Image (cartoon, rainbow, N blue to C red):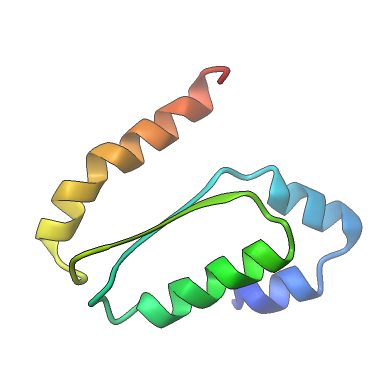
Length: 83
């Protein structure tokens, strides 16, 4: 499952559905997933897919996610209200 392949091969209708998802990408600058997340952000940006993208100090650790989880939950909770 490659998000790049999904976006590149999406029909107009499928791309519209992808754009209707509320995307939130957060990654530490020392995370081993940093490059892939950065490439996903670039792909989304080029395809005008709305998303939140955050890079902060940290790695793929529990301390990073304890700091980030309240912000993620706030983002998710907005999906249940009109904003």
